[in-house]
Image (cartoon, rainbow, N blue to C red; front, side, top):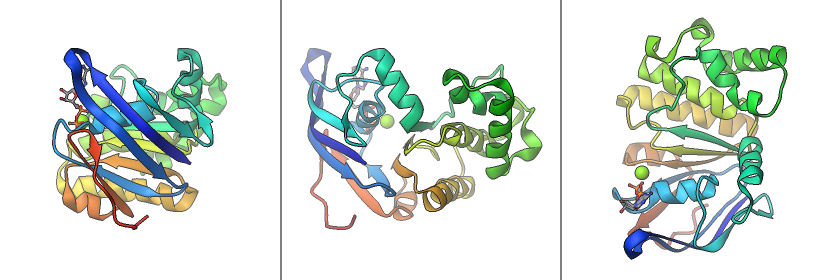
Length: 223
Ligand SMILES: Nc1ncnc2c1ncn2[C@@H]1O[C@H](COP(=O)(O)OP(=O)(O)O)[C@@H](O)[C@H]1O
Ligand SMILES: [Mg+2]
């Protein structure tokens, strides 16, 4: 469902961040992206998530080349196909849990009643039925990340991109977050690409993709 073909990215002053990256993910895969700090992991995830553009190469989502879409088209593809989960949750502090979860549907033009119903159903699915009217500062880190996962999944995306989703959590809570992502992968076939520093978390994935100095390391035939 995802193909990254010969993608390169250079920032100002000629710093090469990604060089000739080629990566294929099949539908339903649950993959870890691991590598040292500064190796280009977040840059690659942001390119796949259409938050940034490659200098060279192409990214193909569900058969559609997406590297040269306009901002508006990219935002639409992102809204329908991709869910993001971040290390620091990126919830809006003024909004309650359900309002945060409903945001992708708001951007899609879904009406108020349906938005709320779907957000509440997602919060129930992630075990937060008793936190729907809480704001982020009234929740623990694990609860915030589960809220963020509900937001990422409420629009039924095909691909979840997670950038160190357990980085701000203790290991028990982190494992619960991975297990939650795993359950969506198992039950709905959503494809997951997750950056992690943690070898134990990576071991929970079907496949481990390693990056170093902006290049993917050759892989075994797992996956
Ligand atoms: N917006 C940017 N402008 C300039 N350099 C950047 C930018 N984003 C990242 N970099 C640089 O690109 C390299 C890779 O960063 P990043 O993808 O965040 O690495 P990782 O997520 O693996 O730690 C680093 O050297 C970083 O300083
Ligand atoms: Mg990073």
